[in-house]
Length: 334
Image 1 (cartoon, rainbow, N blue to C red):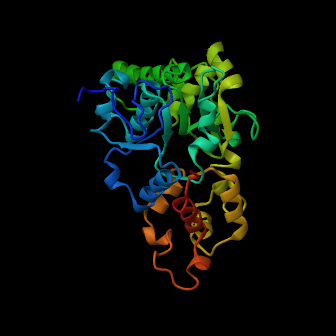
Image 2 (image 1 turned 45 degrees about the vertical axis):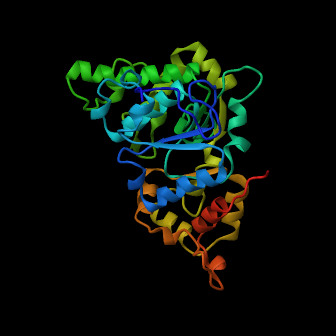
Image 3 (image 1 turned 30 degrees about the horizontal axis):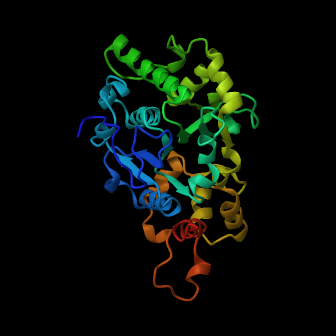
């Protein structure tokens, strides 16, 4: 098959490259889906259960070339850190094909068509793009939406914001390699692209995330310097507040971003109030790096009630077990 060919049929009958928003979920794991932890594999099963008519495509460092051309990515993509490889891939795939990007450590608790994709299938003709923002890291703490997250992104094919975001991201890495002959990351705020961009909101809670969150930095540059992009962000982009939904389980008072407290809460005795909030308010649960790595070490049996149940199994199910059980047992309406 031709490298980067857009003519790939999906199970739903759509053809990538011909429809603006194909029912496809993209993700990336450089070593391949078979090498994902049991926790992350279970997360991906929730995507399938909640979205049975969608294609789920987990690309790796080899299969990515079935869908993309080298010119879609930074020139030295194969030598980049995996985190940045994944960032480049998501922008390239959404720009070329459209669809929904989801990071592997994400539980889906509600079908995408119910809460996310209406915004990118709007018949009004406005360009469609949707994402979460983390208000706790906004310039106006708890209120503003500059800190747009990249672990769930939905967009129409060739959306101008995705294409421009990709251009800035690729340019940054290409310029690093051209100027110093390697991809060793510079202190990003010192780079000419960012010297006049206010990234102070990424220095908070004892962390300086500016050089690590290159995609976020590129987004801030885009909306600060370009009126068209700023207008799309303010007026057209469908923004969901992650603090209340996708990240609530890590921010809620009993956890408050403490990994040890999180494991006690999520894997300990069930909590009816926690479960009610998650199942009624949260369309997804996203687990950021440290928390996901802790859950990677847990066997699937910690999250899933046995198929042959004994009295008390359901009552004894941990909080995350309840979330997984709800997602995996979902039956779409006819």
